[in-house]
Amino acid sequence: MKQHGMLELAVLGLLKERTMHGYELRKQLGTMLGPFWQVSWGSLYPALRRLTKIGALEKVAEPKPRKTRTTSKTVKTTATTGRRKTVYRITTVGEELFSAMLEETSTSVDAEHFTLKLAFFRYLAPEARLTLLERRRAYLQEKLAQFKTNLKELGERIDSYTLSLQNHSMASTERDIKWIDELITEERRANPAPGDLRNA
Amino acid sequence: MKQHGMLELAVLGLLKERTMHGYELRKQLGTMLGPFWQVSWGSLYPALRRLTKIGALEKVAEPKPRKTRTTSKTVKTTATTGRRKTVYRITTVGEELFSAMLEETSTSVDAEHFTLKLAFFRYLAPEARLTLLERRRAYLQEKLAQFKTNLKELGERIDSYTLSLQNHSMASTERDIKWIDELITEERRANPAPGDLRNA
DNA sequence: GTTAGCATGTAAGGAGTTACATGATTTT
DNA sequence: AAAATCATGTAACTCCTTACATGCTAAC
Image (cartoon, rainbow over all chains, first blue to last red; front, side, top):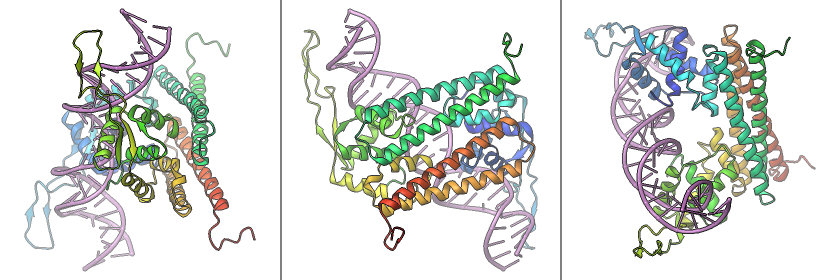
C-alpha cells in the first residue's frame, strides 16, 4: 500500500482501457495528462515489473523468442534477448489497486496528484469527486491567503521581478480556483445531492 | 559542480542579502518564492552543512555552549547539544558559486527552475535575463504546440474531465507565455540592446 | 546502407520527503 | 505549568532521472 505511486496509478488507469506495451504507454501518458507529464524509461519499466510482480498486471503476449536471421551469419536463437513488445493487461488485483489508489483522498491535494486523478474522474463515484474537488479548492484558497500575507510582509522592499512573480502566481491560483468552481458546479448539476432542491 | 541544487541556489541567494539561521531561511524561502515552495528540515539543514563544508557559507555566530539551568538539577555544560541559532553568512566562494549557478542557462527551462532564477534576476546581467526569458518562452511554446497535437489525436474519444483539464492547462500555458512577453518587453525597454533604434 | 524511430531494460545516483529525536523560549 | 513555536539535526526511504547498453524495423 503505497502512499504515492503516481506513475503506477497512471499506468493502471491507462491499461484499464486497453492493453498496451511500455513504449506505447509512455506516449499515451503524455497525450492524456499533457505534455508536461513525461516519464523516463528508467522509471516506467521498473514500475511495470513491480506491478507485474504483485499481480496487478500480466503479460498478455510473451515476446516470442525468434531466430535472428542476421544476414545469414550465425543463426542463433536469442531466447533471453528475443524481446519485442511486451504487452500488459490489467488484472482483477490491478483493478482493485487502481480503485483503492484513486479513492485515497489524503494525498491528492497538490497539483500533480490532482491532475492525475482528474484524468480518471469517470472511475470515481460522484461524491468522491466532489470531496476531491473541494479539498483541492480549500488547499488553493489557503495558498492564496498565504500569498496575501506574504505581500503585506514583504511590503516595499521587493524588487519588480519578485513582485511580478508573486502577482502572476496569485492570478494563476485564482484562475485555478475559478476552474475548480466550474467543475464543482457542473458536478452538482449532473449529480444533484439527495435533498438538493435547487431545481424544484 | 551540481547540475541542479535549486535549494542551494535559493539559500545562497537569500544569504546574499543578510545573514540568517536555518529556521528563518525556511520561512523566507516561502515568502520570496511563494507558498508552494516549502522545504523540509530534512533537506535544508543537510544543504547548509554541504555548503559550509565546501566553503560557500560560514557560521557567523557559533551557538555558545551554555549552562543549562534545568531548574536546579544537575548543572551540566551541554557543549555539543548547546545549540541555538546557527547563523550563516555567505563567503566569496559562495558568491561565486551563486553567480555560476544563476548564469548556467542549460537547466532553467522548467517552471520551478525558472521561478527560482526569476526571484534573483537582479543579480543577472540584462543579456542573461533576456536569454533565460526567451528560452522559457520557446519551451512553453513548444508545449503549447504539443497540446494542440494531442487534442487532434484524442479527437472524440475523450471524456469531459480530461478535456476540461487539457483546456485549462493550455489556457494557463498561454497566459504564462503572455506574462513572459511582458517581462521581455519591459526588459528591452529598460535595457535597449545596442543597435536597437526603437526610440529614435 | 544508414539514419530515425521503435522497443526494452539496468545501474548509479540526485533531490528531496517523512519520521524520529532533542531541547529552548515564549505565550497563554 | 502547559502549549505553541522556535530551533536543530539524523536515518531511512521514495520516486524519479541520467547515462548506459542492446537490438529490431521502417523509411529514405
